[in-house]
Image (cartoon, rainbow, N blue to C red; front, side, top):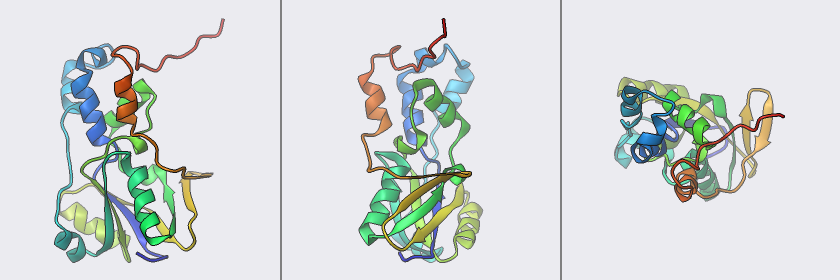
Length: 189
């Protein structure tokens, strides 16, 4: 991995975690979603491939996202090379169901269990995305590798810096009793 390369996400951030939440908290989720929608949320979609595949389609390095989500994968990948990056959160593939579950429980989808999601570095991220898409894998160029160690995260015009990885959001939710993990809005009186 070297400065100037593109960063590509293959698969969906937080999907494995949202699937598990849908399985573990089905009854609670029925308060907001239909049974058929919850069943759809429970279906996973993961990327599995061997190292030879990633190399053959143009990736020079990769890191599987898992516990701690895509944020941890980005942190680990850049840390292994002592390089920084810029990533646009709006470009990271996330399924709508994951977003809805995360909103219900006040979770960050980028810090949620992401088994089956891979972060890849490549000289030509656009071409890599084309290959992945042709093979039926959701993918997007999400940023680029930079010199130095700055890990910048953007969301439109808003810029910030990535914090060190934290506990996976799924573990945090599991400590909350069923029914108590729901984010509530405070009312003004």
